[in-house]
Image (cartoon, rainbow, N blue to C red):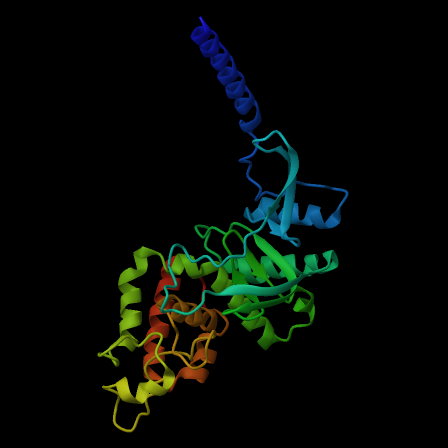
Length: 311
């Protein structure tokens, strides 16, 4: 009899625990899509962002905390959940690897004023959206004032679910040269994943091998620059072994003593230079470097296939 009583008590306890857990852990609204912009006609900035979202499907934010929600944890305690944009560097599954240096990262940033947003939206409409193929997915854009990143400068950085765009208050006063460089950095951040898609593997392999063929005993990427004279072979007589001579635009932005530490960094550097300059300007900068011009041609070939109107 005692055993039956214990079993009955245990069954009641188990049922109560099961019901309590179900009540406290089934939250159908917790998987909501945060990357949307809801209208507020009484707030000019939010309304402008809403109109941009309706036109483009891209939510624009000027704060990395984009929403909050009251929740209950598994112990039945109420708490406020805050949805924050992730700025961890994301490149479509391409891994930096242990030998490719520390991954790019956002080091510091400051919020911009709501008064800076209209000029930024106008710039995006006029300069960026006409260059962006409809197939390219942009999860969101975060507009900020100052931006300092490890790897990608102060203008644009691709995070996990957002592209951070800095220097927003400076947009109205940018001269043509600065504006072009700014545009190139933003487009690089928006387009890198699409350019590195597997459909372009054959073209990209030619891009990488244009440089790699000069370093046969090891990889040309992630090489100490002062070792180039020892490892580079096959350059024309009298040509010094420099990063530019074998097709790099420069050293890795994370460490000036090394060649680009990964193939994707090489692509990023070319994208920014290609999209921030006209063809004539690019030739003025690098026209005397045959291998750079060959790799430039491959990048333009990919962009043309994507429908990006490169000048």
